[in-house]
Length: 283
Ligand SMILES: Nc1ncnc2c1ncn2[C@@H]1O[C@H](COP(=O)(O)OP(=O)(O)OP(=O)(O)O)[C@@H](O)[C@H]1O
Image (cartoon, rainbow, N blue to C red):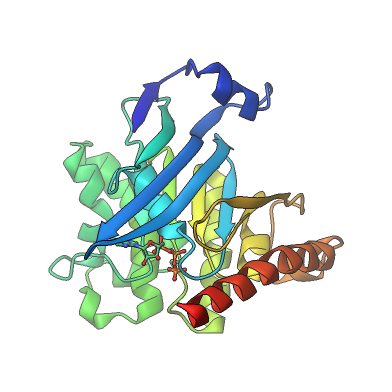
């Protein structure tokens, strides 16, 4: 991975993918990933070409096993790509480049809620008073002020995910990578967390790359939805989601344009889900 600082100078091929008026933060060109395990070769990603702009909320949907998590892990630096180019632009070196929120609860079980949220700030040696104010702010935003001193085992699944989200935003990264963070939650909790995420994001407009299986979730949250093909995963459709902001997770579903976008995405996705199922059955 190539991480650039301020005013990225991108290659001419990358520039072709960018709109001149927008500032790229994540740019992938012909990105490929191949796994070899137990003598078996799996091409997870094939020629992924995409530029995600600074401040954009971008969702990725695709059939199971198409490489969504692999793409996110490559962007995060947890995984390397086999070929192609990936560039992340780090505009402000005094802040972290990225934070991740996973589906599974990834908070520290031995720390209180407040200590979990404070963790990244402490690592960055942010002054104590600022840490305290930031923790208080984000705990309030996710409705956990009264649980600051609780430990994770005393919380429900939804509350733990709130702590993860508060921690990620409190750390103030430029990019937030979210891998199906609400997948394990029931519908009501999911809707509430979507609302909270929208509210917090509106304040900071961070660049977000969010993976989901749900077309509905992608439309509720994103400015842009990318549909991936069945494995080997590549981008099949790039759909602008110009629904009003600020958004309410509930109201947006009845707003003009939502139903058409939903239908369009389903058409794109359906083919890939069928293809993935067929491939699995034949394997
Ligand atoms: N470490 C690994 N070693 C070998 N194969 C892997 C590895 N990680 C992922 N894969 C394979 O790469 C492909 C893409 O996996 P990935 O988890 O990225 O898909 P996904 O779209 O996120 O799936 P899901 O929606 O089910 O979470 C799958 O076939 C998977 O089995």
